[in-house]
Image 1 (cartoon, one colour):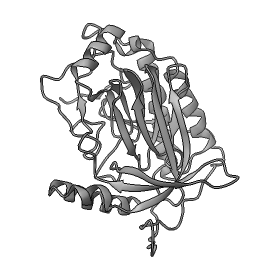
Image 2: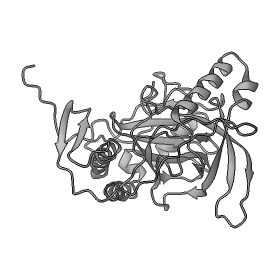
Image 3: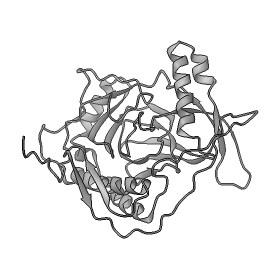
Image 4: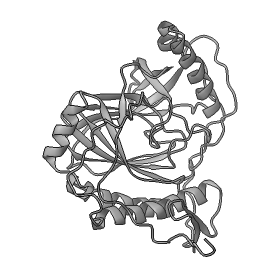
Length: 342
């Protein structure tokens, strides 16, 4: 399985014949921006995880690629700006509403300290171009055509704490509404343009509830019962956060566990998006991806946002995301594995 993509996120085609989007010689030294992004994301991930665990003391960064634990002295912590999680989760879109206690999503409490390190990640990502990934426009365009309209991904860096992933969208390709449970994701369009529609939950569904519905609907799809898979899911109220067009001129967009966490993309042209996922999707860790379809909306007079009903569905059969090999510049971990005794 491609590291950046959970089971429900896509149907993967990762054969040896997949085209690699690249334009630099293998082994070429990493440009400064890739290294800077790795360092900024490492720091942000350490703060994110420490605060999710309720720690304001020492930050522990797990450098998986280095095979070693590095401790960094924590900065003086500012008072966290907490947004309390809802106590119940709606399970039905009409009729009787069932409720269950919501479990806290890791990282739902975001402090001023995290905001500061997140700003650094954004500043680095805002400077990225295709060249910084070792890709030129001609290589990107030709490779996108070879994927026959399918989205492809390349993982620049991957660990248990965060991933840096490039998404290559052919024109008119799309990813439907999906969520990022307990995750913070930084997204930057570095080439092309796409539309983004995003939502916040009115009442946060629990991860368990969403997983149970997804498993039930995926099982129906596996049996060939596509009507059940696409129409029998529960509905949840969501408030629209954004409906916009992203281009390289737009700043890095951040979604959080409780902000714009459900979104959809549609490419207006061949497009490349750089993402930092913190932490990555992890089915076993309760961070699986869930798909939704907007089935209704009602305007609220005098309010800025609309409230829509999002119905959970199985992964659409038309969504194919191909994993391909990344051969561009790589981040170099600052700490190397202690190999004494080998």
